[in-house]
Image (cartoon, rainbow over all chains, first blue to last red):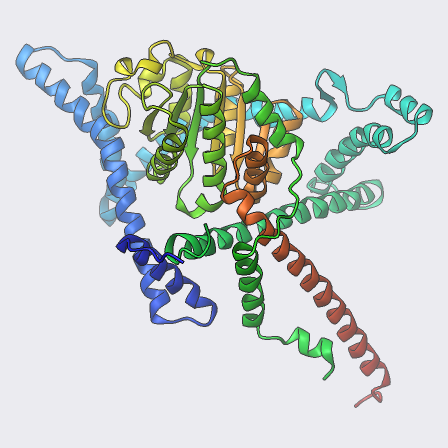
Length: 236
Length: 283
């Protein structure tokens, strides 16, 4: 057992214990650690964004642009940084109720530009490629009579799963999409298909929940591992 | 009050104690339970194995301390693998919380493996913009990163001399606790044809399986389990494998509690229904 002599490890260990004390009940130690986390995170992000974003993308080009303008008498592309700079200032008008409406200009520009930027990429990556992948994988159709032929000729778990997994996926996609189709009342064929969709959704939620449990346990393991190894030196 | 009545009203703090014991004991006394390697993790390993020595790998450390216990071990494992295979690694961050973690992990792994900064790896640091940064690397990495994290011009870094865009990079590995893998797929893969592998938290893993079946991602490392699998593949145990015993014990405990909770709930409901049936009408 080699207890750490680093003050930072002790601080981290004390804050970890403060946070976990909430599991017993809410208390001032937990509140202290929680507020400290929020404050430190906000301060850290402010500094990082200012030094990595505002200074190189706004202050530096403006400085270069105005220096060139006043010393050489010519305007360079660096001065274009005035436009995003002004839009950024407009966002801050939300702090003044009388002129707060001006912030919408900046937000409108931001949303418009952002949508234009992401629509094509998202359309291809998340919709077109996924539709294609639902029916064809690795240049082979997922629904194949030949696969069923293999299953009949050489029956086994491998051939069975190979034959039915593709059709099952197509059924799952269609049934789940039907569940989210609200323009028709869910009765008859549509209702039955939607119910099958619910089954697929439940399987999906179950998988996500299982993974979520695993993720949360992993975080706990990470913290306890820190306490036992870095702080107390019990585990190596 | 029978066992199941008491079970349904148990103070949840007893469950917390059980979970804590279930984590501490396997960490102190490892059980050495087997870890099987899943195909998505093996695919990442195989892809890195297939790269010729000298082929650059871009590793984007897109997470912050809140997901470090899961993503830290897999970052270390991927770096170890790349250094072992003599693949130059370009480290960068799209998440503002990532630089400190990327530095700590890369320094530790570099010391263990003898990798040299500037020759075997370089750290470009954080750049705001996400999508814009990914798009700019498709044209020239110098547009977003004219200098590295230490303000050293990119052209003065030996390993970066011949690297300009995705066409010079063998593989992009994004290690993320948020939706950055979607952006890497949408722009680096779809627009520039870059090969993408992702390491994500377990919460997110299920969401990224569709990208595997379409080939938009070549592989996926999901959560601490994925990290443990990768550590097993490279033969260097780390925090991933160390945590697997505890993970298994806690999963068994949770499954047991779910089963007992449901049995108790069903028995309680049956008792209530019987009570309603035997109660005189109008009572």
